[in-house]
Image 1 (cartoon, one colour):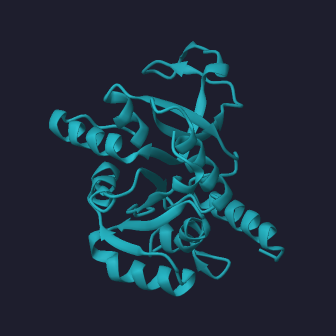
Image 2: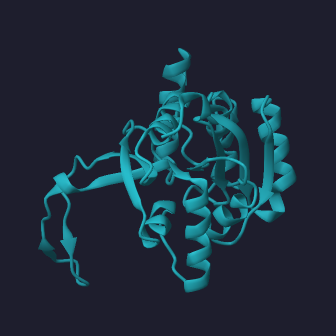
Image 3: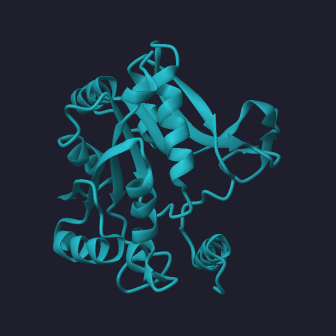
Amino acid sequence: MVSSAEACAVAVVVAGGTGERIGFPGGKQMLPVLGEPLLAHTVRAFERARSVRRIVLVCHPDRVDEYNRAVVHSVRPTKPLVVASGGITRPESVAAGLSFVEGELFTAVHDGARPLITSRVIDDVVTAIAEGPADIAGLVVGHPSYDTLKVIDADGFVTVTPDRGRFWVAQTPQVFRTDVLLAAYDAARASGFVGTDDASFVEALGERVAVFEGPRENIKVTVESDVGLVEAILASRRGVAP
């Protein structure tokens, strides 16, 4: 257990996606939302979170300067912010960001395309892992599955309807003990393991990961219809028209 005063983390915000399904020339991270790039809304939540000491923004190698200018211009961060060159895949980009996390007890990894995250959720989950049992290596923000799930075969036929009470929708941020997360990525690199989220790397190491309930609206912008929803929610929070 760590005291509340020590419940601080470095945030790794992964923003390397091209957003091909959105169809915006600059990629979904640069989509204008309420007059600012979508990514700026994401980074601002971490800038305002009292539990975040530093921010590492990982992006496409060719867009480091562009992202740096856009985010700094919009957010005007008061805490250290580094824009780093990422890799081709998300795990490669996260691994690039992890080269900047030494010195912090906890690391929060977040998708740049989840601009509805709030500083309160960030602070709550960092505090929860810091004050929780030492054998919990990570916490995954998410929510219980509210929809019925179906398992299908290769031809699209339903084979089973599992109990949805056992399923959660995983989101980000996902917060880990930094030493464990670094060890998990080192092990994956050595074995060739590829996970679909950061928690899966830690789970593969045999460490315990728990869930932390967050708001359902913390969606990842993936398709065009997501943009209108995000803008409407952000506008409602600010009390302005979308």
